[in-house]
Image 1: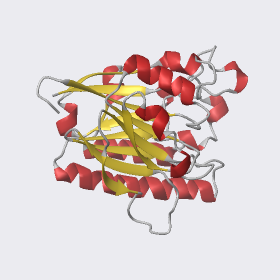
Image 2 (image 1 turned 90 degrees about the vertical axis):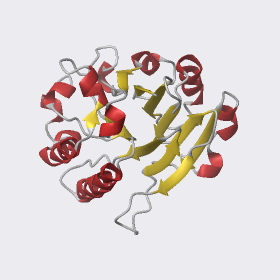
Image 3 (image 1 turned 60 degrees about the vertical axis):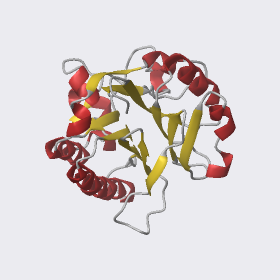
Image 4 (image 1 turned 180 degrees about the vertical axis):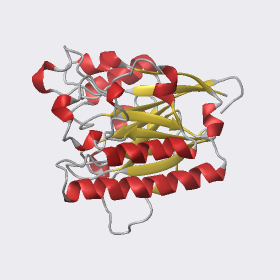
Length: 263
């Protein structure tokens, strides 16, 4: 990162990148983030819209999966340098949920945490195992001393303050004590939650379900997070959510979240 230059890193669960390419491009055109972590691509690497994004200045590193999951890291003006493809700790896990790259002096980890519903059950057990492996890897990244941003859809609502209401979600995997404790364990390692730091008293929602008129009612929750290592956190200048993107025609049920770091 050049001295004095501000760098914007964003995360966006695009919920089918080919289907949402128009709102995605519109957002990129207006906000021009330097780095973008995308989740839930729902396409194989061969079907990813490289050319459409290259036309507006973005090169992509992609870990795709047909119909499900999928993560990508976009960089404005140059391709991200791949560090890791997939989360370590379980060679049998083939789901496309974690991608790591170097971009302009930063290590960027793009994650799409398992949802875990219904719980209890095998999907919730997988979520907890994945979270445990993620936390172990996060600890090794902290120990490296590099400036790191771990961005993505964590599929966990950190506290009751991060959701419009909890009664109807009491059995939802996103609010259970175990994933919440795993998220808190990341903060205890030394990671900084950029959105919480930016707005400690009022949660910045990142997701509004398509169901029950939740977007017009602002019945949202915060499940997309940007975690900063100590060296990255000292550079933080601001963070936020581009809420208006959620209201675009054909948009994802998530809105992009971002953090700005100074050089």
